[in-house]
Image 1 (cartoon, rainbow, N blue to C red):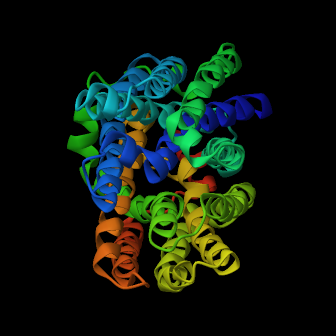
Image 2: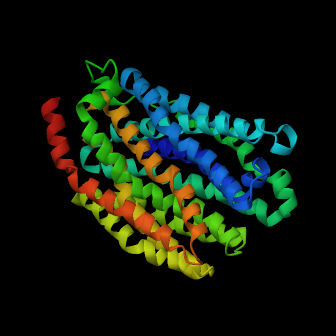
Amino acid sequence: MLRLAAASLAGTAIEFYDFFVYGTAAALVLGPLFFPTFSPVAGTLAAFATFGVGFVARPLGSVLFGHIGDRHGRRPVLVASLLLTGASTVAVGCVPTYDTIGVAAPLMLLVLRFLQGLGLGGEWGGAVLLTVEHAPAERRGLWSSFPQVGPALGFLLANGVVLGLSATLSDAEFAAWGWRVPFWAAGVLALVGLWLRSSLAESPRFLEIDDPARVPLAEVVHDHWRLLLLTAGGLSIGYAIFYAVTTWSLAYATERLGVSRSVMLTCIMGAVVVKGSLTPLMALLGDRYGRRPLCLIGCAAAALWIFPMVALLATGAPLPMFLGFVGAMLAFVTMFAVIAAYLPELYEPRVRCTGAAVGYNLGGVLGGALTPIVATALAEQGGRVPWGVAAYLTTIALLSLGCFALLPETRPVRVAAAEATAG
C-alpha cells in the first residue's frame, strides 16, 4: 500500500504541477504577452478565460478516461493521462507570443490548455481509485489522502520554480523567456511519473467485476444523476476557495495593491504547505467519524471565514494575508482530505471511475473555472476591499453546504459490510 500510495502521490503531484503552473503564469504574465491589445484588467480576464478552459475540459477528460477505467481498468488511465498532460504542458512553453504570430498565439494557448484539462480529468479518477480499491475499508480515507496531497506538492513545485525565477531574473527576462522554463520542466517530470507507474498492479475491485458497464456515462446519468449533481455542487466551494487564494488573489494583490510577486507567492505557498501537511490527519478523522460530517464542517467554516479572509487580503500586508489564506485552506482541507474516499464509496464499482471523476471535475467547472474570472470582474467594480468577491464565495459555500447535507454518509464499517455482502 505504501508503494502504491507513493506512486499515486507522485503522479498527481506531477500532473497538478502542469495544471497549476499555467494558473500562476496566467495571473502574472500571459495577459500582456498573449493579449497585448487589451487593457491590463481585460488582459488578465482573457488570460483567466484560457485558464478556465482547462476546467471545462476536465469533465470531458473524466468521461473519456472514466470510460477506459470502467471498461479496461484503472491502470491504463494513469499512463495515458500523464502522457497527454505532460506533452501539452511542454508545448505551452513553446508557443510564440502575440507579437510573433498574432491571434494564432492565444488560439494555440486555448487548444493546449484544453488538452491539459482533458488529461487531468482522467488523472484524479485513475490515481484515487487504484489507491482506494487496494486499501482496507477501515483505512480508505488515510490511504486515499496520499493522492490528495499530490495537488499541494504540485502547486508548491510550480510556484517554487516561478518564485525562484522571479528572484533571479529581471521582470524583462522573466517576461521574455523565464516564464517558459516551468512548462519545459514538465517533460522531465512526466518521464519520472511514467517510470514510477510502470509496475503498478491493477485494482482488485476492477478485476472482480463480471459485468462492466457498456457505456458507463449513460448509466451514471440515468441511475445516479442526482448524486452527480449533488457531489459537483458540494465540491464547488473547495475549488472556489483554492483558486480564489492561489490564482485570483495573486493577480489582485500584484496589480491592484502593488504587492510584489515574491511576497504573494511566499504567502500563498505557506498556506498550501499547511493544507498539504494536514491532509492525512483530516483523512484519519474521516475514517473515524465519517466523510459527510467533515464536508459539512468545511463548508460552514468557509462560509464564516471568507469575509475575514478578503478583508485581510485587502491590507496588502504579508502576515494578515498569510493568516487569511491559512484559514481558507483549513476549511478547504477539512472537505477535500476525505473526498478521495467519499466519492468512490458513493458509486458502485462498475461505474465508479466515471461517476466519481465526472462529479469531481464538474465541481471544478462550477468553482474553479469561474472564480478567477468572476472575482476579477467583481473586484474591479468595488473599492479597496472587494466585498463583492466575499459575497460571491460565501454564496457558493452555502450552496455547497446544502448539497452535502443531502448526500448520504459512507462510514467505513458500513461500506466494508456492503462490499462483503456483494462479494
